[in-house]
Length: 306
View (cartoon, rainbow, N blue to C red):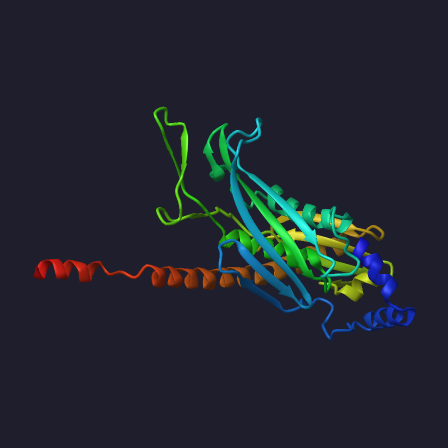
């Protein structure tokens, strides 16, 4: 990947040798154990469908939007889900502005594959009028700081944004019942998306001809690793997707080891995402109550006194 190549040039030979030598003794430069994840922080914006995730020194923002479009002819009753990524030069000098590079395309494909192939989002619930109007859900991933393992951080940001997004409620009207009426949030409460499960991406790094394995590689570790593999699984242990990048082939026993580790990590990350979303929904409900205080009881009593 482009970012990894650029970072490799910034590291000196002594830096690379130090990282490799430490890994042989199961020591990582940030003090973690080989299968220890960095601390995850999940925050949300004031608007629905906006999240910011920090994984160590990596920061990623996810934003979900929706619009009514015409469905594909071969899927007239299904909505759409698309992912777009933006790698800002402010996040990493190796990122170039303009057209998405190889890193951005690959990151988007990994997240998209985990969501679509596992059918995590119920696209049929996005249909308003079969063959004419469906909701197209767009996920924009913005890389703010590249501290390594962008895939996992971006995946968490996408899931958190999806879980807090709400689309406008629609109804059918008109003389023929074919007119779509989109109700503003002041009239009808927006509806959350139907998400069946959370596909969690867990990335592993391989070093020294695949003999050393670790989880959640940092920016510097990515520069010296010989290969990587991202396994996307949910908390139930269902395999949603596997992506192998670089390096030699991986033995079956190592793949099974990665899947077992990924399932364990996915369960804890899923809980952290759900807890953060629950806290956001509680805060959202409180904000709504403050904006619309109930005064009906006072008005009724005043009328009765008159």
